[in-house]
Image 1 (cartoon, rainbow over the protein chains, first blue to last red):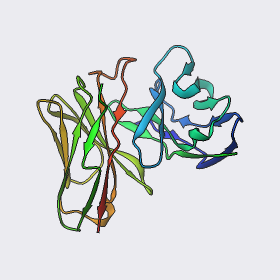
Image 2: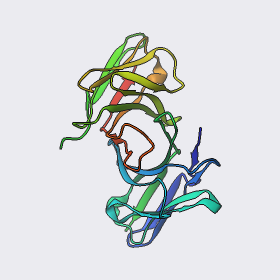
Image 3: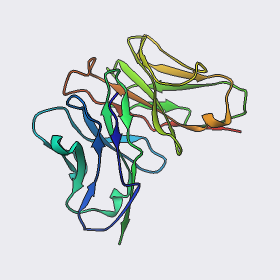
Length: 112
Length: 117
């Protein structure tokens, strides 16, 4: 089964600064990749997904992600972070058995 | 359209007891998946149901079971609870019947927080 790795456990950015969260996927066929966000005490909200085609995908809340096969990466970006973006972010890959395999998550802290 | 709903939201049980959690998918969604989220293990796949059939099961002991009803609502059951079963249990539903489609997405409910004492 394919897997993903999120190298950063915690990231702190200033409000208004740009953001990039890293996600690396294991080698294999073209992966189906997702980014989810989880606020404290809440479920997961889908930000964006990649199946094929254009390597730059746009999502909700101003997020985008770029699929780079050469680097086995699917990094999430946002040009200007808002305090409300503070949350836990999860990268996930869809396996053949309809199972999402999640990374360990990156906790984002936004400072004034 | 209402989202995925899970009941109850919070639950406290004692070791050795059993528990049943419920999930109602988004209207029209026929696939329901369950995940366990713990601080140590993160998010782990439990099982997935489609049209009352379990299509896939994660690496969990037989104490964890589930089922899906004809209206697509799903329940999961944990028997002989252990302290390590304390977790947030998340349910997700999907419209697409096959993952071989760009429309495939899983929508998550708010979860049921289970505490085992």
